[in-house]
Image 1 (tube, helix red, strand yellow):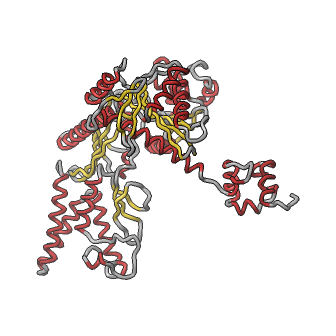
Image 2 (cartoon, rainbow, N blue to C red):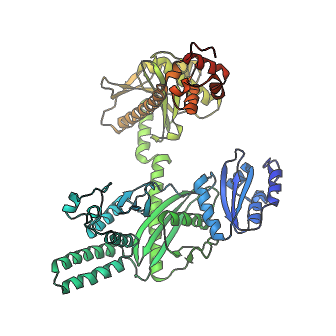
Image 3 (spheres, rainbow, N blue to C red):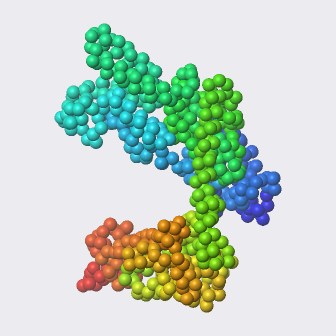
Length: 605
């Protein structure tokens, strides 16, 4: 058992461990604030939870960090391992624990929804805000739109938000059977949506067989035009199914999932297969939190994806066995042959492609400078004769309206790209009125005095959004007051508020750049970004500052007190009708007397 030097709460935790049962269930680790920081499942809760606090030296650095932060433990006993698996998934989504690996939010994936209405509709949506049955998620909107168009050609159904009492133009052009006017029976309409559900679930075969039987019957009745229409629909459906069919249709209802991982991330792909056809394929990225194995991550991801996609599969094809996946939850096929092996290989190719995409995107955002960006940084270093390559560039801008709600913003570019984690906002505290020079001096002093006190690394180049005047204010603060040696440049704008020139040195000199030069575009991007960041902060502050009521006009009553009164009584009028005792219970006797006297100037109480 660990000692107090590792976790000061270990005495209380040790007592708690003795009461944990040896049943299957779910455990939650909580920190000192009571926040859930990890959720896990176990066949034997007593054994699993106790293992965190023994053999500490053998644990990975991340698990050691988790153990040091555990203050309390909660457990929930369940009947079966399947219940534990499902409860763990639910709690992770609910609490979003810091140390659990989780799938990226799937809100960007599109779905098709059959609404829960007397006469249903088929809707395209990206959010689960509509009451109904969801199908998906689909990998992208194009595939879903294509499927929706095919269904629209096969069946007629209503698309109106509200049903009237007479046929609309959709009925006249043959896109709706007009159930609103009784021209299509409810049973017939619902039968249409039964067929739509089969298609969305991938059950093409039965619908095609029924259509063919109906086509032959119409032909025998010499109703050739109707039979031809059915033939066209059958061909359309078979063409769509043919594009998705990759294996024998005997592979009826199977999920295929594969994984690739590195030290920081895991990448998974899940394919949904019905009757030999891939209904959809989803890929996702997971950031590792506690050095989990691929099997642990797949177990978590599989549960989550099954819920998100409403999968009905009873078999899953995997590249490895999952010991923690209960046998009665899904049948595992870990050494596939024939068609199932082809599907697993296809899934692996998908996840390899997705891994490359994610790594490329991450390299652009946070990785090393790309060759083109590196060349631009070298050009800046050469043009300004900087002592080091300007890997980190910081740029400042002020924003106010006639001196009201003055703020400033700072952006940092690392390797020629925005480093948004390092953006900073500043409320101007010591300057009154529209004085941009003094405002710039204040924020630069606050920024770099803090970095100096924290012994944090300084940027390689400081850029101020302005000309020689702003550069001089920065020079006085950095060089004369703080004695910090950071190269200072300025970006001046023309009378149309467009970036016009780069200034450097004291006295400032113009560094010649053509407007078509990629280096000019980079500097222009930095200037536009800091202006956007500062003005957005200013607008937010201004919108909050201009929110006031009659209450805030009372001397001695601020926004916080006014907000408390409105929250308690609902409106200014209701506040004015309250007794002194009621007001005192809400904001205290001193401020209550001020408000009461304001609304009751002649009242003795």
